[in-house]
Image (cartoon, rainbow, N blue to C red; front, side, top):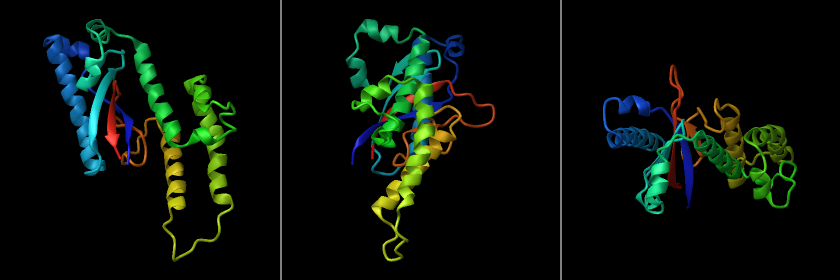
Length: 219
């Protein structure tokens, strides 16, 4: 059992459009409510009683950021909290990269030395651009997955549901989630928190995601 941070692409009303009809604080509350309702709907459909959760923050596509977890807000100065309401596109890019790093770590991709030959695997990951990480995953993961099956003994009908089998299925599923994502690493195939760490909840006709919600979920 552990806690991990998950990321969700979502669609919320445009902040500037809300500001035309209400105050800034009301607009922020409107987005917070809509985003957390989307998250809790996901957890209700795909989680279980063990999945205690704590929504952390929302990053809009223009970089404006709204803190959901009060303990995070208390760590920021008044100036820092105010600066989060100023557009900064780099925050959106960092939120995507954070989700990507979480998925790479969760797939144990850091254990593939061909992908990260540096002894300090975390430093090697940090030194790579998003496109370099994704290219390396597509280059190395198929070979790694093939290796998981190459030397298997014939299945034992009396012991068919093994932990090793579960790990093989999970890494294949995680790689397919990332491979098929329209915005990597956010999977359009919605699974449980036990299976993957980033989901595209705005996937559908005429839906264009404009926010990322991060949450701490117990598994």
